[in-house]
Length: 376
Image (cartoon, rainbow, N blue to C red; front, top):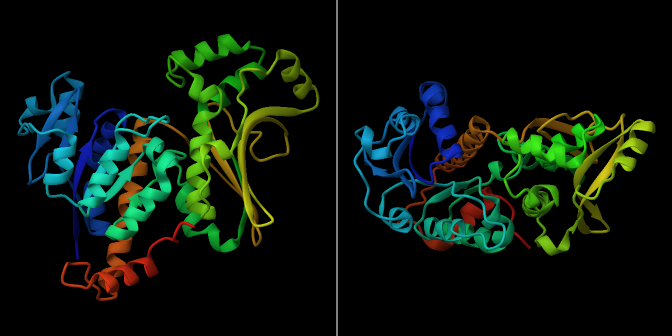
């Protein structure tokens, strides 16, 4: 049986383009191999315009509009006059893909969009770590109340499946610690510094390559990594850490002398984000660490990200891959949608309905028994 999912995209920047390109190349395979049919029925974007077609909008049209410098509706798709909130509430869909720019101070407008979607009984997939890092517990509680799912893979390592690996595979092995390179900008800068380039020049190179923003503070001072650790603490340790609970030091104060000294000792500086279970409590930190060359994270080059899980049963397991990129983040959205589909098929397999005909108590009991763990 083919499951059809109608998608409403809130935002259509690089991530939206990545998802559209992913669907162009993989949609036929998804239908033939996985029996999953994904249809973009609406896109709402402040700069590129908004479109809505209940029958679905060909992703090729969306891509062409952007490539030609046109509004989305100028390639033949019906224009949509409503704003994002109206689209989330009123357009019939199954999944809201929230891909507006990240705001690590308030989480808005992503926070409002996610709440509206779940209150409307719609699943949410997002790559926006701001709202999730700042308000995870509230959003998770709302998702449980509404029996919907949040897809969050793209908030941590983009398309590299760090979250799915931890939740679906390694959690049973007993995760005691995780540590990783969660910011490609910092990793690139530190690599260049070890090659003899000074910090400011390495930063400018990272900006020229598009790795770093004009204001790089969120990256180089570690705030971006803090947000990712908060999310991982919730998802993998079931612990509600706040950004203030995580000690944080960036890379901007590392000196050439420290770089040289580490190199002399066959060590490599990396900005390491860490979560560790100690005596029943989870502690988090972000700081530059001079790693010995034998450490699996010391060899991670350029803008690549990586995570090492330290488990009871398997010891250390390391996963490395892209932490940013248009297609990579678009794939993260796809992987979350497929995770939602797996849960829906499980519900179908067990012969359960999530329609309004079922009592709320029975629905809640059934859903929580097969969904993720509750947040403490």
